[in-house]
Length: 216
Image (cartoon, rainbow, N blue to C red; front, top):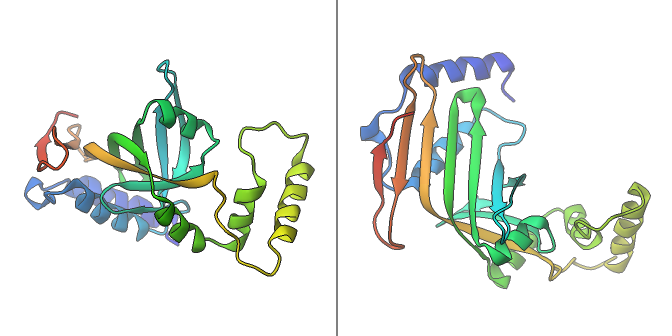
């Protein structure tokens, strides 16, 4: 894993070089993968972490950390369908993700519609999770008040007993979502006061992306 000194040095390099508009990918998801791979190369403690912002039917916002599972034609994450984020998305299927890689002076924001994955997609991802995580998905009833940690430990033990000697199936209350971006913004710090900021947007799903540089 990179040391703090390594991250400072890398961040200084990015600030010095800035972003060459001519080298940006035409597709923001490809550009995201490029930046994300560079970020993972620094050995961060939470390389997949992002802040997901949602809002309920009354427009009340909420935000929380989620783990980015993977990127295909959108940003995919998994959760308990009884969670606050799932309740928000059921009535307002629009959300925003923010990836803050501040040690290297970069940020990526994505906004768009969110839809559940198919059962086949969720099953495939669940099958590759560590067994302990699979069991926890059965044991944890998100947002339910519990007396103490011992209750959760007991529920986890019960799940372990229930599926002893067999594969753990995906519970119906757990699965994935895909945020299909309509707008993606890339920001990079520079040594001077004018930071680099580029926005990709498409007005019609399936239409090509248009990228512009915008004021910081």
